[in-house]
Image (cartoon, rainbow, N blue to C red; front, side, top):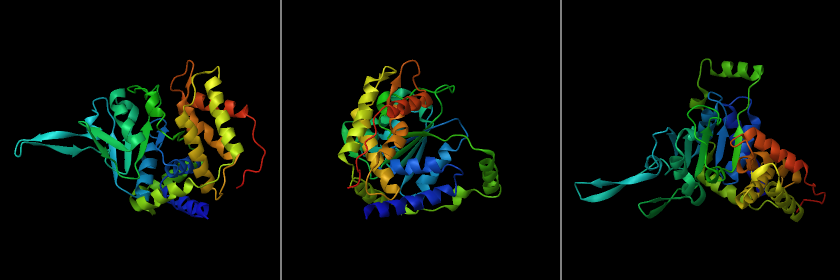
Length: 317
């Protein structure tokens, strides 16, 4: 009954974050999927759409250590990872750890820093460790990066390197609010700051244990074949200069398992794969003539998925 426990944890997180973030049920569910699948989250949208608040709400909902880095053009890699500083009193170098040594790291406006500084997170995101002056230091588990970025056309931004984009499990956009949501936000925030009133609903151990349970969700052979066919189609597409990597294959698999469990199922369906594909794969491709256009990339993924034959076998274990 692992899927029931996973669904219960996801419901607690959804309800808690929804006390702060209005009208973003889909985005909240996608982020929970990414967290329980063991990955990092990238949120792209215009300034003022609630990206940072959403990340902070998730950080407060988990009883874990949390640090925030405001990415700017003058930020150096050592400002994130840390460095050894010479102590004249004892004639030794002392390690000063950077903010990356935490459970939840909010990389705010990540694409305002130079590519060199952005790349300082590569090792931490993939290998859960940081190398400082030749010494490799392990990071605490879980280690989750919430990164926010402004659209590429925003002034003062740098494009994220493909290698770094590939390390984000899910990329999503906040989307626009309708009038009802905007009125609800005014009502909720007019006399209060909801972010100050929420507390943790799960621990670091809960997240670690749940990630292990996610891996037990059954994926039928035909669904595995469906995932691989989608990936291979991106590599053959005439619209793409760069298809999805093998890391993307595993990302789509793991996210599908997490999403199925959140839905209370012990098995993955092709619908899970089809729904998640734009969010898991859209930032991993490079379309001709539209570098960094996430909306177009997501549309290309949707188009590719529509052209793949959907398996009709019984997907249950």
